[in-house]
Amino acid sequence: MLCADVAAAQDPETYWRNIQRTRRSQPTFGPLLNNISPCAFWRRGPLEAPTTVRNSTSALIVSATGDSRTTYRGAQALRTLMTGSRLLTLRGVIAHGIYGEYGDACVDAYLASGHLSRTDLICTAGDHDRRS
Image 1 (cartoon, rainbow, N blue to C red):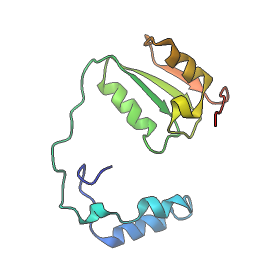
Image 2: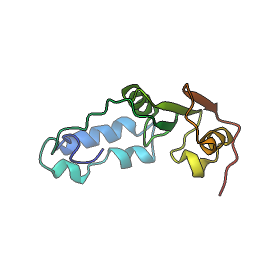
Image 3: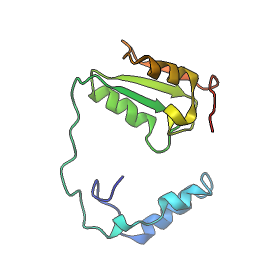
Image 4: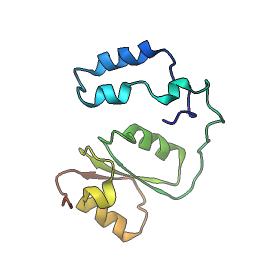
């Protein structure tokens, strides 16, 4: 989320409560990700209308079920809005850079083919070759 996308809470107590709420389940990153940011000091509300996505463009959406940067739920929502797209899911993986970083053989083989499948595809973690 960027500051101009949505209104951010301006009360520092809101951030403190969020930190406390996530302290046990996310002891390292909870305080970092729930802390106050410069967005709290921007003017309220989005600066422009949100982009509307609804089309039949042919596109491949690649997502891991455990990606914390771009959530799998978001990938599924985008797949619904882009009716001509296909969703390639890497199940059971907590990773963001799936192609070229994570090195899953199923994902890499599909992307190397250059062909968009007729259906959504699911690759399961375990058949991967991690690269450094």
